Image 1 (cartoon, rainbow, N blue to C red):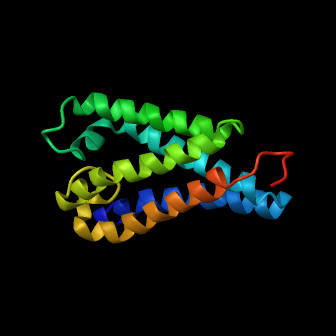
Image 2: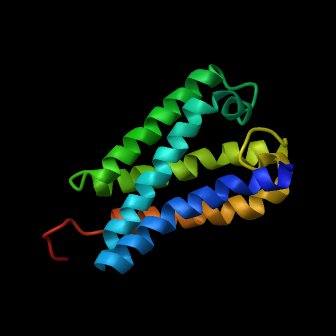
Length: 159
């Protein structure tokens, strides 16, 4: 498969994970809120899975001066799993939404480093041009976390 095709796979998977539950639950049950949350849970679960399945390429996304890069990749994968779990639990959703936003903002420098250095996975091999795809996707994920997790309502409660 050409590099260009592989590079666009990850953003397309993320968009599918976000929008499929939103549209399915929104159109089927008129439950846009739950659909948005389920999409975010799926996305963060996918991100975490990448840390465990593709540890090597994820490690390459960090500068060499970062100590214990492999341990850091595993730890951040675990953090993303905790965020996904928190998003799935209504009691913790708002806090997990804020945590998701912090994670998305905090991890973005690794994406910039990877794109500038043509390393890692998920399209970073394209180089800085990939940030034209990644930055809007990151903004969408931050909006999604804020809209559906932070501003979201708990079932049975009125605003």
